Length: 212
Image (cartoon, rainbow, N blue to C red; front, side, top):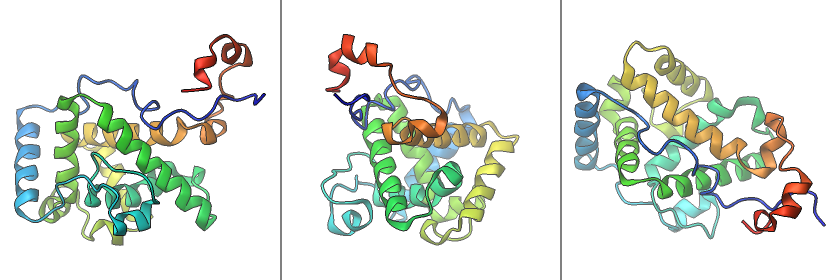
């Protein structure tokens, strides 16, 4: 028998996160997010889930159907994950791509399980970061996300982490919480956080864990 339970479904690792509110913005933050989301749609940003279209699949792997993240969102996380995960993300090109791909898929699957309120908040946050005007003026990221270096992504995250504006602080928390749970919550990466996995007695007593 395998001493470890099988990997959980992508949505399982994100399901325990606080579903009441990710951003908890005030009136000003809500207005800014709403305005940016409308402007992003009018400005031609991707608004539909990426699905399994060929050009998206070429980057993220075949067989997965994106149900929340758009093409622009995928590019956003492709730029941010190396900065958020850091040395835990292997440098070996193929393994790195697999880790990035599976993490983004788990982010999508987890968000799809969230309630409508959190989905609306996250959609507005992603639109704020994807729309060129607000990406430059609010996030101070001058290049489009596919052209952003890890150093630039790290600098953006640090600005939002240390900002005196609550919207930016909470946006940073939302981005890092989603990404870190999606990465470290997977069986392949448990050891990186010092978690050995469920004890064997629990797996034996609760066999549905292996079949989750």
